[in-house]
Image (cartoon, rainbow, N blue to C red; front, side):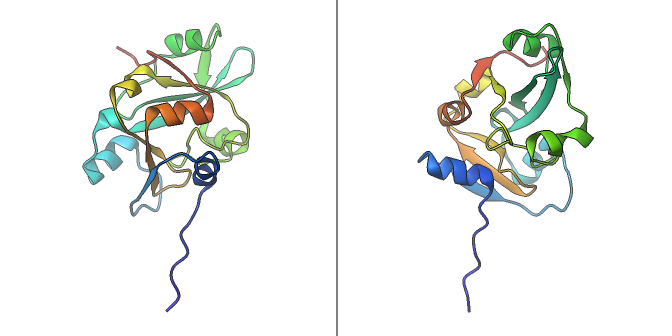
Length: 161
């Protein structure tokens, strides 16, 4: 019997190319489920599970923010962290065209373009964090330092208090 071919997402290929150590976690899911429900389903910590939010600034530039799944982004702090007067979240219908990813499978790694990325500073409190693997049903577990390095991210306090 032939061995099933392992599915590699673009994000995984980029991590491999950069010799970054990561673990893949898969789960059954046919459609978008928010990160809190996925963390609950898999028994994962909210603080270590990060969601990816894509925004557009007044300048029409796109920005990527990663925050814990149970938190809300503070758009004022997010804008300040990238030097914009204001940012607003990208409409879901525009997500694939801008990033190459769909809702629930969006990761900061391997978007169509390397956008300015900011990860909530709380990531630095953990040895490993969990992000989307670039496809619904796939997660990547890696060190925050490696994620910061591969997407050239900054960190800032960008969650609503």
